[in-house]
Image 1 (cartoon, rainbow, N blue to C red):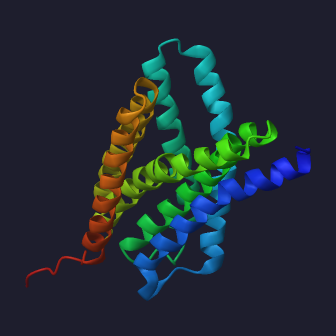
Image 2 (image 1 turned 135 degrees about the vertical axis):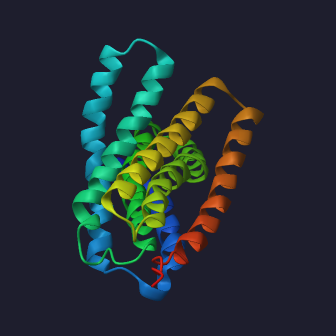
Length: 232
């Protein structure tokens, strides 16, 4: 298959899963949706962070010999870079004006990040002429890896949303806890994928879908966060 067609198919295979999930999750904030330009900026920032993450992960691969620690550090690298994109593009704008916003921004950045990862994973099978394999690979990433990126980043946004009306110290604690939980979830998924096969892999995807259900519940929880009313 020619190089131009390979790139076109890879871009489609990478973007379609992320775009489907993007439209799904944005419905959770439909009542007070964020500016389209800001959402596009978050998505593109997430895509660009893949480049930075690849360099960092290459360094980790060259310097860390233990496989378990390597996968944990890779997960930490990706979660940190995704959050940096959110912090730079969205968190300090005046559009970040309600608790649910941080979750939305984190999810959009994560889907941009996952889109480029999907493209890179699809590139190999497509360039080898195996369209069927690329479709299967895309479906598995739609079920698994894309959702892991989404859920793990959303956990950080949820943590920040819970303390939206509190001071900077509470927000820093929430960020550390949320980031730690996101890294733990992401690393657990990575480690489970490389150590299991067949039915065990399907069970791994099953708990990822369970995490999605929990994420929907978290959306509803953060929607009702209100500032505390001080007693006279």
